[in-house]
Amino acid sequence: MVSEHASPLAVLGGVDAGGQNVFVAALSRELGRRGHDVVVFTRRDDADLPRRVGLCPGVEVEHLDAGPAVALPKDELFQHMPEFAHGLGRSWRSWRPEVVHAHFWMSGHASLIAAAPLGLPVVQTFHALGAVKRRYQGGMDTSPPQRLEIEREIAHQAERVLPTCSDEVFELMRLGADNERLTVVPCGVDLDLFSPHGPAEERRGGMQRLLYVGRLVQRKGVGNVISALPRLPGVELVVAGGPDRSRLREDPEARRLIELAEEHGVAERVQMRGRVERERLPALIRSADAMISAPWYEPFGIVPLEAMACGVPVIATAVGGMIDSVVDGRTGVHVPPRDPERLAEATSALLRDPERRRAYGLAGAKRVRRLYGWQRVGAQVLDVYEQVAAARRGRRAASAQRGGSAGHLAALGEAIRVLECERGKVDAWGEWLAERLLAGARLLAAGNGGSAAEAQHLTAELVGRFEGERRPLSAIPLHGDSSSLTAIANDYGGEQVFARQVEAHGRPGDVLVAFSTSGRSENVLRAIEVANSLDLTTWAMTGPGPNPLAEASDEAMICEAPSAATVQEMHLVAVHLLCGAVDRCAERIARESGGAPRRSPLLPPRRIELGDRRGAYA
Image 1 (cartoon, rainbow, N blue to C red):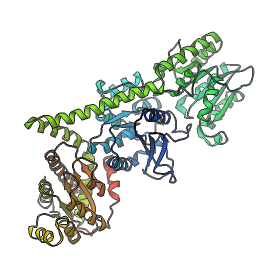
Image 2 (cartoon, rainbow, N blue to C red):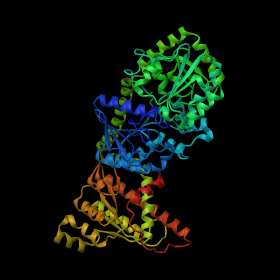
Image 3 (cartoon, rainbow, N blue to C red):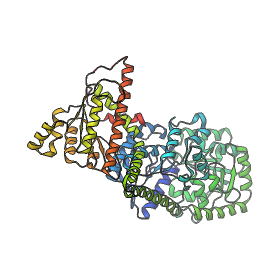
Image 4 (tube, rainbow, N blue to C red):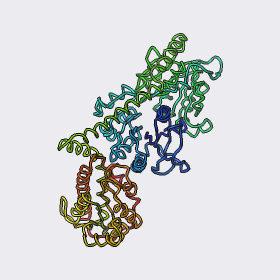
């Protein structure tokens, strides 16, 4: 599970802590209960958090570094997703999952980057779509401008997308998603916690009670409910959500709602409860005559389901997932969004009719038990995982079993599709390499057998030319000097043939590119160890992971292919892509400097900055 901003350990009720946190936590627990191993990867927002924390049997939460270890608004996290993706890739090379399930668009973006070189299938749940948010919030939408295009890419690249409701299906199809890869899986409800049976919170006599539970953000429509309250005499509104009650005055939206209630003369009938512990929610819900959920838009909405599970009727705006979950005239009432007058009319009619409320409550509890328990939702998700994993295994097996040229070409086509997702990394490598080599650094390349040919191909293109004219760049294949190679092997052993040359030729700021189809060649591993000790930047091009060479290098491009021949062919394609990126960067530098770039003094070694460079393709 990947949930970059919504940790299953987070306290609910904050601006960015709500339904997604509940979904990820509950789904993970259900999978763990069924005997599966689950790790939830989320961003570290506190320096004191341990790397891994147990959530329940079979489920752990792993905190990854991505930007400063402090709480940040989720719309400010996109710039840190390259670092988050890097952390995912490093973890998955040592703990390889069978399926990656990404939650929210930034998690999907980072997951696809990390999963592509490992050949891991990605399943995506968006929880909210940028196009819908922008449509309803307009200028108030603070999402990064890249969001819509990235969501379109995720919809095309993920193995399967799991919309939570039928409305989201139509939105995804507008993005160009293939209907065959869409499977509706709704949010679920903890039926052990939320049920009609149990205590109800005491309330003051003579007043009917409306209840809102959720985050305090303007689009949730609490202001519209307060604006409707003057038309509902004898009715109180309880608002549960946001920070602790003692800190409500510090929250901008809470202050706005309090001031709005005072303006409408209903302040004495509006209770701002602040954050309510989840274990206390059922009793609070059972105390209400109706749950009210009036957002301008809502991707799904778990709270209406929790109210229905408690036997409480729901008044909901006819948007998003609530069109599916709340059945108008049977389990609740639909109203148009942002219309206090219509909201007041529908609410007044329902509150005046106790028999209708009772019938809606009974029907709602029955509907939730039948369709929305986490056992049912978990089974639906597992079915998707099994289909996706089986399809991936089937494609690999088919490629491996098909004989002759047909099988070879099938494996090559599958590997090309994986490499397609690595273009961003190749471009980032090329830009970094061009800047280093034009500044006077040197590239060293090493490999054995066919990998030696790929390494020498790379150095030849850099010293010579690839696409256009440019200054020759310093690049040395460490297997090219047969006299040195045999002398070192004779005196120091074959495992030292590259390492000793790295020690001789390498300088801080240089780059070593190591090629190995297995990722386990001892002489290449020794070279990486020496290069790291000398402050060289180390890159690896390997076959299937996880493998020791990828782990030992600063960055790795891993080719998941069934044969060494296909891996080497992909390395050749990657070499050409890398050289093309180098040429484009060199041309840009020459253009900006008004001519051919001159050699400049070497910059201090910056191994850490490779992670920064990845931001160029985020």
